Length: 352
Ligand SMILES: [Mn+2]
Image (cartoon, rainbow, N blue to C red; front, side, top):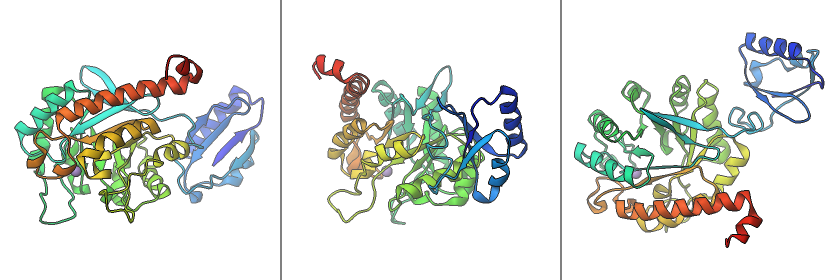
């Protein structure tokens, strides 16, 4: 609900109101509004006596949020969320708000040498986070299932060697202890509605990369985010990775409109995975640039030294050389977008 307070509320009244909310163990955000002071209270309908809130002396109005997602809703939290990923001995990597982040790496960790080698290259080419699957959820039981625990070890060696934070997918709650040193836990498309897993991740403070389910609506995706957020973990990054449509020319259909829609509906950062969305290396660059133009907060891209020999998703993996070009183009386009967004006339005068 959104609670609007009466004008001219004193600091003392405001403080008392806040401590009552705290006593009731409600999660809430303070909304800075020029005209009225508002507070959004995030909870299920059953968890709040709205009449009781309405009856409080300083409350002017209590409005229910109509959308099924509450904690992810921008109405509850007007400012953009910026998720910070700590980096040892350096500034954290930031995703969201005005920050853009490039995530890259192979679909699967295949060996220690492979992941360290590619990580070292990607670091020099603009990647800020290293990706690599170890617990693979594959459509076919006969496809490569990942190196598992051994792969986590290799990924952490690559992190130690390069300083790049790492993201990898969790397949099941039982694997959670193995993710202690992993910087970002990915929930893949097949697990987007694994609510028991989402609830467990809500108890952590670790960033979660929540991919959109291949057949999920944006509402369902944001409700999945609410499972994590309402548990107390505010570090959720959304990832559009293509949805299932009647089109077969690409692996999935990249829902590029999801980027501005999610930014409208939610305060959470949203990044795009053009690799799984298209399924073909040759389309990854154009869809990456489209994502930047649409306002995505980052990209996650599959890169492999020798895509033809990749144990998974070779068809959609680009080479480090192609990544270098993509990364450069994305940077140029992003600068142009920032300039255009901030000052259209100035941008036009400057030749854009
Ligand atoms: Mn993959």
